[in-house]
Amino acid sequence: MNPGSIAVMASGRGSNLAVILDAIEAGSCPVDLRLVISDRAGAEALTIARRAGVPEVVHISPKQYADRAAFDAACADAIEAAGCQWIVLAGYMRILSPSFVQRFAGRIINIHPALLPSFIGADGVGDALTYGVKLSGCTVHLVDEVLDGGPILAQAAVPVCDDDSRDSLHLRIQQAEHQLYPATLTRIVTTGFRLDGRRVIWLKP
Ligand code: GAR
Image (cartoon, rainbow, N blue to C red; front, side, top):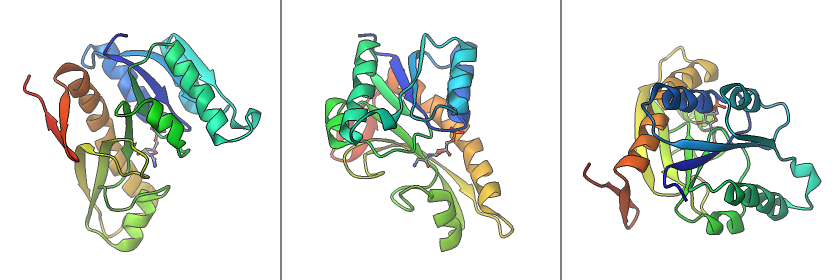
């Protein structure tokens, strides 16, 4: 298996997928993006992936499976068949079943729109705004069986402004995500890291 091969799972707009594809195209992110999976037929991410010529782009519908574990197993089979080392979640809005996480232990990466461990869950942006923090940001982390709880690979902070709406804050966070995600993927497949407990220790280039 190519150590730089990745599958992206996305549910929505796909702006993180788009910047990863741009970075690959520009030669600044040496990953081999072989597969994009979406759980939503209308996800813009699918269009972006097809337009960019990703070798395999699939919609897998949760409705066609009896339960979450069966749906996740179908996704996992597609990922294994494509020979992907890393699974990159980019706005993937479903909670992964324990069997999926165990099958790819230490190889699933997520980006979350808040500074973890604060504001886990589906609305990290809105929850941070409502709480009243003055700094928020984004976190790239490994996925384990705890929701938004795996070891942290990288973070970037952005200010929260007094006149922010949820949308304006999310836009600022996404600008940070678009720098951080391709850069972190590059670091993963070039230098790599080891774990010391929960701490991610980046190896020297
Ligand atoms: C991103 O902001 C990402 O952090 C967030 O969804 C957005 C997807 O945007 N993910 C989560 O909230 C996961 N819990 P995109 O589809 O434009 O990449």
